Image (cartoon, rainbow, N blue to C red):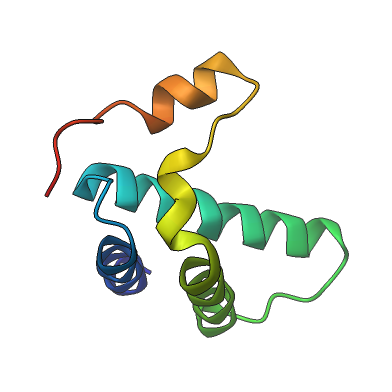
Length: 89
């Protein structure tokens, strides 16, 4: 999985110059785990890392350039996502 995370982190950094490496990796890990958890909760059989990579890649392609604009209604989430703001790659 680490190979996929690194690849997707680099893709996100290409799409969004406003986030740091740490933020990009955090976003990728969150998107990855969110997809797998949601897919499982919906009762679908696990399709493997390739399927998760495909979906997260689509999300990054479609929304990666705007992820730095995300604001959660939960302060703890915002704190987590903004932990390295200002330390750009």
